[in-house]
Image (cartoon, rainbow, N blue to C red):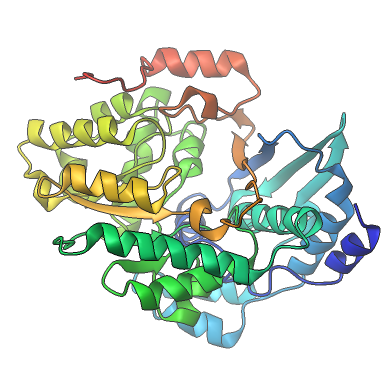
Length: 410
């Protein structure tokens, strides 16, 4: 590893705009500000890649310090102020907002990179996506300094060319894809280039980006509602029994957005548990649901059955898929459900970090505590569970009668 490369990274700011973050972070921060302004949280890093990230610690710290000096500019605030569901008081809050590096604790834990973010939930919520983008880009600059944006451009050109051949002559009305690639991107420049290319190459298919900065610069629709942490926090915020925490999270979202941002994430516990809580009231209020773990076809069939059991026409609702997608997978899922329910696809790493010879990062930053109490995400892919307290995980599974979706599940 070149120490000179790491030194140059420390002095070259990776996050150049506070808008370089995902839309759901802004949506959740506004809801937290209005509903839980005094809540505290702990968010922890976990890397599933078998590689040593500890040499990057000084560079990561330097990038965190750089982000902490940034504030929203007047033109950025004007942009946010013109988004219908972002309220005036929240945009005013952002005019005074800055991230605090003291909330981010980065250290070497027995030879592994450890990161804990601790502080007021409303203050630390913006760190997750930016920190992962920082870690990913530092690591990629060090390990893959020979890779260029032209290599990424060549890959996306071939992918789009293949897709165009696959769908030639086919009615693709309703096939919609978006960029969800901020967290594990090769670099910001790569993500921006891919989104720009897709916008022009597939104007009737590519609909937007989860990244506010990219959406603003390319005049795309910013896309995103809530993440797992919204549901996890409600396990600990009080005011309801643990078994009712998903319903409390959904109700708080409905009251905050009152018809906007109407896609609900289903797998903080698992789809089977979600369906029990997503009654006719919520099914009518939300526009659709989002898949983020487990078999997408099995999940989609279960969602259709859920709507049918509630006597709701599935063709009036939308399934959003966002788990490990590629263009090929998205096309296959679209064809499977075409005409039965609306679909949309958020594609991440396979677009924003697709360069020959580069293995993308596999990492997460997840809430582990809220107001001093444990929280956990289980999901329909058991390997994605993240919580230090095994006893709490077992209790959560018992309370919700945790059963992941399987083929043939009713």
